[in-house]
Amino acid sequence: MKILVATDLSAPSDEAVRQAHARAKPGDQLAVVHVIPNLQPVAPLFPQSTQQTILDVAALPARAEEAVRDRVAELTGRSDDAFEVFIEQGVDYAEVARRAAAWHADLVVIGSRGSTGLERVLLGSVAERVARYATCPVLVARHVPDASAKGPVVAATDLSDPSLPALEAAVREASHLGAPLVAVHAVDAGPTNLLYGAGLLTGTVPFALLPGVIDQLKSAAKAALTEAMDTAKASGEARVDVGDAAAAVVRAAIESHARLVVVATHGRTGLRRVAMGSVAEAIVRTAPCPVLVTRHVDHAHSSH
Image 1: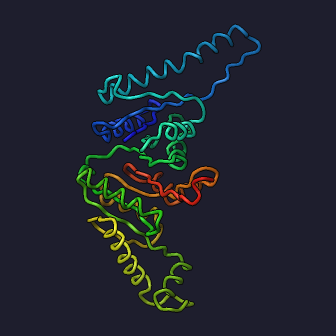
Image 2: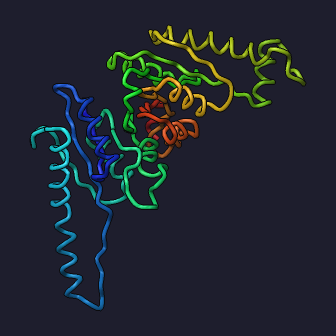
Image 3: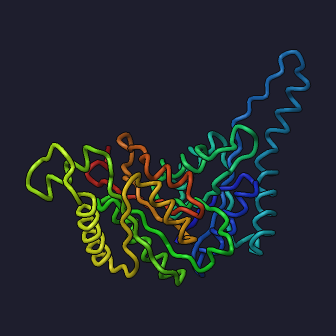
């Protein structure tokens, strides 16, 4: 397996490095990518200053690589030849995704709050965009409290084909961690969806909600989720909630002290690549633990 971890040398990035190192098995390859923003040193009134600045900028990649190597060695104890370092220049999330594709990474690991400063107080920036655009699974690393040491792996699924890789990946993660598995599905409680669901159950499209419709929908969803778990050879709890899907998954993660949440996104490539989706993004942004974003590739559109 080829694991690429992104770092900006911040504390959240340190956690990403630790988790990437812990995931790497003997024989796996580990690489670290650090992105330097494009700098254009221009000072027309002081040409001698511009020349010195150009020299300083030219020295940045070597200085950055040295800093990255020192930090990784300090955090993991790895020798200098036990990992690669890539120093890129450009837009952070784009360069991480580009390097992951060029290096044929099997997994990207990135901290949940990977930059400092007031402009990056909230997530929504690098980690979320890397998860959206990378062509391989992405682990958004967060520190796991001691209370979660024996917690489960939570798999989010809407029971569609694109969500099945999340369930399959969660089975592998739970097996690797020796952790229980909780599969979560949320029944959309919006009026339109409830009316449609009631119509499926009764053979009609009702104008008002029938008594017990929500319970019937939950029961049907529980049966479908159990069947999906059987197909994925998943042994664990099947949990069905009513309401917002992302909130249901995050709530399950909080209540169970989850070690990891696994969610899938529909991953087209090329010009027809689509956004990660509001549910996956909300989970990445608000989950209390690491989130593994897996990708369902639409092969019919992969060449566009």
